[in-house]
Structure formats: structure tokens, C-alpha cells
Amino acid sequence: MRFRVPLALSAGLLCCVILFFEGCGGGSGQDSPGSPSPVTKDVSVIEHTVFIIKENHTFDNYFGAFPGADGAASGRVSNGQTVSLSHMPDAYQVPNLCNGWNCAIEAIDDGKMDKFDLISGGTLSAYTQAVEEDIPNYWAYARQFVLADRYFTSVHGPSFPNHLFTIAAQSGGAISNTEGPATAVGCDGSPSGTVQVIDSNGHITSQSPCFDFPTLADSLDNAGLTWKYYTPDLASVFGSIKHIRDSSEWNVHIALDTQFAIDAQNGQLPAVSWLIPPFSVSEHPPNSLCQGENWTVAQLNTVMQGPDWNSTVVFITWDDFGGFYDHVAPPQLDQFGLGPRVPLLIISPYAKAGYVAHTVYEHSSVLKLIETRYHLPPLTARDGMASDMLDSFDFNQQPQPPLVLQTRQCP
Image (cartoon, rainbow, N blue to C red; front, top):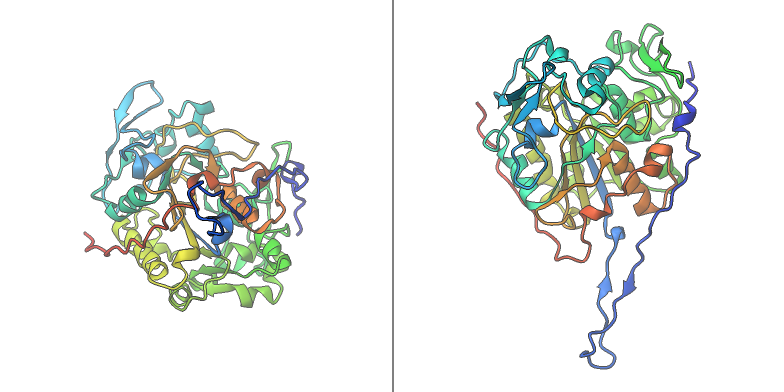
């Protein structure tokens, strides 16, 4: 069935976008007559945006000890006490962690961020943290490029609605993961597949996980720009967007994740890429952090060693908080979120070197940067209001060279 988009997420809200135009800088007063003036670069030097989306970790869980970032080594629990964050093993068995809609709201506790123990079965399993030795390559990227410590999930809830935000700056009201057999998920499944949907009055119903609202892909198509969604087994959140799933767009733009490295090596990256890892290397517990980081390093190495590096930005984030502790209260923009903080790495020749960004970002902010780059209209109020992220870039700096890293032997 077609879902009516909530008015709160309509595309009616417009915002002012500052456009950076190429121009000539003024002379120093010492230049000889007729000497060329330096050219001021802008966001148009970015020709390829890559959005890598991994699974289920908070900022404190990965970068809580990172120098210069707003991290924590301890956290509050529901009885008012403070506990130290324990060291998280590489393959963390956490059967009690909950990252659903109600659990996220309970853990946030009106911004007190003190009930992560209650959503993990009364245990302290959420109060855990990796250190640099556990994810050294992620820390190396953070030291060289940009680490954002105010990047929040778009929905206080799990993967599916947050993935919808990464393509459309809305979830169509969805607040849960889909339920039912694999063949029943999306617009090509049977009616038995369902997802929880909330309306503007807070009423929750179960509906088919098949929606039909505009996405960034539609904006890119309308502007004559290329895009691909690289994903394992051709499973894709675009499978829940009816006008894409039921059209020729599907076969053109949905590709296996293994195709990404081939396209990067051959200089065939589209203007916009989404890249989803296989579940085994997604870092979703209990999968190995080391193996997941190795997969990410391999993808980045192909970009950095390929011909498109000098015109590319790569965003690496985690789709939802996974039930893990984070101490920063997320701003509440609307009934959907924001949800708890997750890490964001911004990797590009034009990313500020060794910079920690403190600006509030969310999944919709990546869409906002792309819309700013190509002068595309906002899709919803969310990307209309979102930061364009340009504060994390310096387009006039000496472009940063590739940081080709080695994969590691995993435990």
C-alpha cells in the first residue's frame, strides 16, 4: 500500500543555501602586471561522494577516548551512579542490547542519557568501549582527516528507518526494522512483510514496508547525475521505494558491493555512491571489529589508489547506536529524532587535516552536502534544515595525499 508521508517531513520547507562560486583572488600588490591571480576553489571540486554505512556503534563506544573529541570513559546508569566503560572485546557477545524505538527513547531519558542499563536487561553490557589498539586504522583516518563528534542518527531506533534517511531524509514514518521472511521485505514481497509506522499523532500501526516518496536518487536522475547503491546480494533499502523497485532504475543503479572496488579502480565511480558491507564485516555485534575495519580499509585503498581520489569525498558512519552507551544528548528536531550519536569520518583530499568537527550533523546532512554541491532542492524539512558540512572542508588547502593503510591480522 502507498503510505502518506507525514506533514512534518514534507518537502515544503526551504532554506537558504550559501553557494560558493569560483572566482579570482585579489593580487598581493607585489605581483607583476598581467600575472595570473590565484583561483579560489569551492565544493565543485568534489565530483564523487561515497557514503559507507556500517552497523551499530556509538561515538563513545569507538572514539570516546579520542584526543580533542567530546568523548567519555564512564557513563551514568539508572540508579544515578557512574560506571567506567569496560574494554570491548573484538567479537562482543551482547545478547541483551536493544536498539529499538522504545529502547532508544528510554535510554535517552529526556536527555539524561542514563538508562542504557535498563535497555540491556539490567546489565552493564552497553557500557563498553573500544580503544585505539582495537580499531587503529579508524583512528588513523580520524587523525589525518575529519572526525565528527556531533553526528547523530536520524531516528531514535534501528537500522531500517535510518537507512531510509540516508537516501531520502525521511523514513515514511517507519520506526522499526522490517519483519517477515526475506521475500516479504520491500515492494516485491508478499503482504506478510511488515514495518511499524508512526503517524503525526503518535499512533503506531503495522504496514507493508513499501513506500513511494522522493529520494536523493530521483533528484540526481532529474539533474542528469549518476548514482549507484552497492550492496550485498542486491538487497537494498531502495527495494522499499516502489517507483525505483518497479522500474528499470533497479537494474541500472543497484549493484553488488564487490563492484565498488572495480569501479573505483577503473575511475568509474558515479557522482554519488552508497556502499553497504556484507553483514559479516558490518561490525554489528558479535561480528569482528577487526574484520569489519579491514573491509573498510580495503574499500578506501581502492579509492585512494584509483584515478578518482583527487575529486572524491568518503563519508563513513554507523547506521544506529546498537544499544551502546553514549553520553551526549541528541537534539530533538521532531518526533523521529535525532537519535544517539554515532561516529562519522570524513575522508577527502579537501577534508581539514586532523580536524574534529563539533557541528551537529545527521544522516540527512550528507544529502544536504550533495544537494549543495549540485544545486538540488531539499527533499524534506530535515535536509532543508541540516548543516551542509562545508565547515569540515578546506578547498583551498594543499590537497591531502592518500593514506593507504594495511589490513591487520585479526584475533
